[in-house]
Image (cartoon, rainbow, N blue to C red; front, side, top):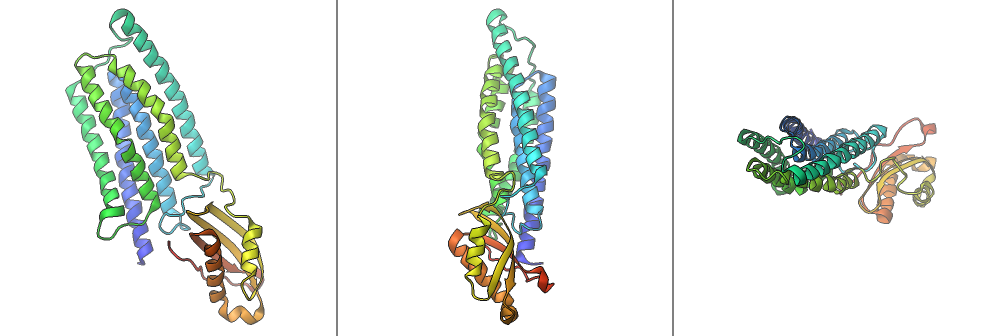
Length: 309
């Protein structure tokens, strides 16, 4: 197995491990929040739901056969777009509902010193959630170690973005655990106050996740086809360049697919010409992975010429 395939398999397994840990934590937080009537736990479960989707998007990037190391995560299809829109709708509805309940809880506390519904936080609940959080963070820290500090680091941007996002919001989980302890000690106002804070931070967390994982939701063209064609046709031996597709973000990573028609005298060095075309594209646009084919009239494809960056 080649090095890139090995790294992709490791990245996939690590992301799958993180996915199961975050799903388990989400189920525990949602169930515990519903049973204990804790609004802040329900709000925290929404943050965990964002982590679940972040991991799912990373899995899609790593599992795609066109994305050898999960670096080319910049072009997603309709399924990922529908998932992002669905997640936004769920978070919007749930967030507004929690805000209404939290404000109602505050008003009732000010009037009667008791909540609209009693929040029951037992020590066993705090221990259980702490254990689930430790399990998830353990999986994330293992992935972070593999991507940066291990002897053979994994160059998967999808994995790095996912671990970075989860660790960035870890302080909120710690704050919720402290809030549950405060509620258990009788400070009932902490629960709705934390709920408002968590719901307000949902917008930033969702935006950061989508900005990192899905900067191009609808597969827009990264580079104008005319510009790519002009650069390719400047290489000696290229007659024309057709069926040009490009996805990505110029300066970060761009994936380009194109078909070349070569002069018959240059057919014997088709692979070399493909490498020259990709080199020229890279000089103009930075990190590029190109998949170059001969025109269909020649009835055969050129092997992919690509360089890792």
